[in-house]
Image (cartoon, rainbow, N blue to C red):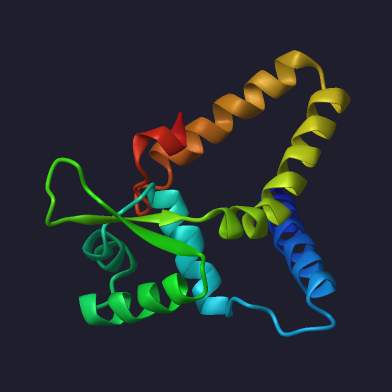
Length: 151
């Protein structure tokens, strides 16, 4: 039962995102491919990684990552920002154009979270938060995000 309930929630979040993306692009071609969307979500979650950090996380070659990053820069979804500590190093930064794209998904998540807070007692919400934090920190060791994403 728990597996089915979790799968239903996860699937509904994905499907809502897809509905919104398709409705916005029904008269023109979407500007991000599926793979590019995955790349952008990963870069955003990693919090301004270098190309090599992105490549390492995705388990792809540096040239492959560079190709994908350069395509996303050309489309205006990414920029490279020189590191103030090591001037030879550049960090990937999402642009406002991508933030607007991403907010399609994030705004729905916030809407559902508001509904949860209204629907359930504070104790239940606190328990749900505790469970989700344990799942993120302890039960998903394969996906290591920067600490700021998990606070």
